[in-house]
Image (tube, rainbow, N blue to C red):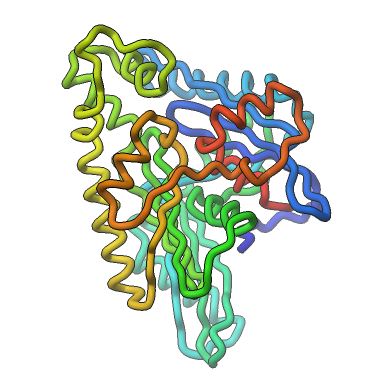
Length: 349
């Protein structure tokens, strides 16, 4: 599904720009007869001091985008950005037979009823899907103008033009569907743990996406561990990612990690149960995890606690890289954290 904005542009190369709360990730792809090839990739952490206010955070984010872009050597200034969180919504709809002129009004009315925000202050798009009958079926996507404008402005201040806006969960499913094959009757679940939000994206056998953003993610996990251990969040992050030895013998984080992940595990489990109850034929046997997944022991913990086999997903295991050695190193080290950016880069204009 291509959630493109109404832009009268020729198809050209874009970059996928994933602006998170703790880091910026950029991926550029080239499409040929064999599929996609990575031509450039970069990741830059966003500076975040203890006394950083909102204005300074915006400045730090723009600086991180500019540094990340410079490190990749990418020349295009056309970017596809993603949004997630409580100011976005992805919902399935089904109406009785309607004329093409009536569909848009019906979609807007449906959005007003199901979105957790005032759609008059947002943008709504939709994709119709055949159902083999007389009904009108499809998926609507909505996001607040405030969220969309913030992402566009951040890109603009870094000298980029945001020409498309996508939803992170749909970008994940788009990327996954290009390279991972699932058996008929099986349901795909992708869990992307970011810094502020965890996105659970599910695609059933009916090809309809289910997206839920959970407000408990990597940043909260790190904060919980730091509070328990009485150390800085930076020290916890470095230890979890294996960038340095634990700070003293008390920094063994196995039990602390499990305790800090408890709420996330409960939220994901409840969401999976809700989905399977709604889609009675759905069988979720495997969950593909990306984002925060590089933390030592994290995948094993989820695999032991979630109601389905849980595995690490690195899309770049199957997407070849034609970039320089630095690009290859980034994808090898941070591939699972770059999945959203890859999905965004697969959009076309």
